[in-house]
Length: 289
Ligand SMILES: [Fe+2]
Image (cartoon, rainbow, N blue to C red; front, side, top):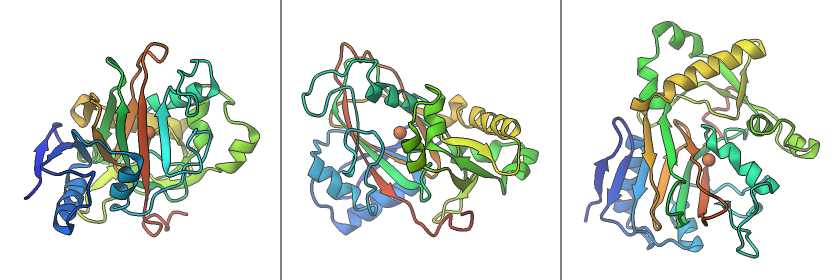
């Protein structure tokens, strides 16, 4: 049986029905999901009771998985845990704990792993425990926004290269958050500001909180340009908001989608989201490095 694809946002995002992704998929079903991913950039699946093994198995259909580094409690595994619950005790983590401050940067628009030399293809976020209010995730499409950029701005950014720096996104929450050792572990990388989808040729702005400045521009000028582009991408007509229900799995294309977390009461409610992240194609952006 074919999957159903229902458009959710004004210009991107779709709900996928008619498939149980907790079980092995027929190749034809997988091909439909993969095509929907390229077309719609954000895919929403409801009622999928994924455990960790099933999430890994489904995520691997997209490609090799990143192994999480950094201070994420799940470092060393394919999971980036987004939660206010201590991984060992299950207790709520105090809001002044470094692990919670680290997660505050998720509320800035970003593309997961854009600070890596090979940025990711996509993220898959599985809702395991959802607070009764708050905690939605918002998405903005750098692809949907690109065509309406003024022509002079398009010319300005066409060949622009941005420096993405993990410590910069944390500095915006708390200056000097990363230790010297952490900074050294994640050196800045360079990526084009405009990326072209290899399947459909559509162009997208590639920005976000890790994008620190622009090569060949002063820090001030580069940041002003990145801010101008971000303001354009995050206009309401290029955004879609997902309110989570337990059992949801949402996949987004990090090559063209920015996303951000929204607040919830971390002292009253429990939240556990498991993210897997699929590696990008090392050849795609090699010309910039
Ligand atoms: Fe994220």
